[in-house]
Image (cartoon, rainbow, N blue to C red; front, side, top):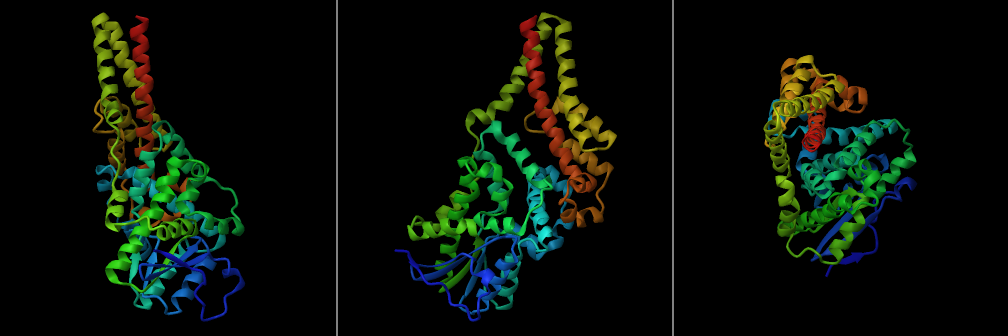
Length: 415
């Protein structure tokens, strides 16, 4: 039975007043002690507390709320500059990379206003644990998996609203005070970025917070049992502390491996939703057939509407992001065709054409972190502009498909 140890770890030195508010709990699970430190991901006091605890020498492992990709970004800041943009586009990862950059920009902007390095407490944990020759345990779920499970959990009609909310959190220029930053202890960076949805939305709360509580608990238990760590320090966002504590105390995880496997799985779309794009294509093609059967004029009017609306809105999306004129033309020509094949998308073509016509420079890659901190930077940097072209032209084509489809139905009924 898991048991909570009420007393905190006695520090070797006097604790400064401002660090006394850092939430900390020590649990004993199956003979293993786990001290969970709740931190703010943008807080110097949190970083100081991490340093102080590791310096006690009481731990034989340090766990951090990082996944392998986020850990790589911290230990190798130049990783983004080595990104193969063509492969990202071809593999359909452009939207995921854009979302990751957006979340990083949200954290970066708030940190700059306080003069604190983003993820300072995680960097401190990695640095000090390495110097102390302690194992570093990466216990969080891959950010890509979390974002995909969020996407799956949100009703399809709210996904555009979700994207707009994320964009608003990125480009807002409201002043953020030090006190407001400290209140991030109630959540984490992901939750803060989706704050206008997360508070009362179980669709978001489950994959964003509760699933990660369970995932990190399972990872901690797995590491402790397999490596027989006597006392582990876990550095996590304070919003996760209570959830992890309750999961461990209630013994909810019987088999960590099973739990991890389940939470790493990307849910499959429901059968009807999976076939919805093909149904729409079938309806459009059927509409064309009916139109031509009634008259050549009606059939041609349908095709012209399809090309102008679908291609026009895709081209408009590319234009908004200041794409190259040939990229805009590609959007106009490709969208009406790619919309009839759900396995492809106009965004892939527009992004590849833009990347060929305006090849990103080494400087564009090296400035990714700074440029994504502002709306102007997203448009100015060639890398992020290509990602935006992928997203905006795709969105334009999607909207165009529904509008043009409605027009086709209207022509059939009206004739």
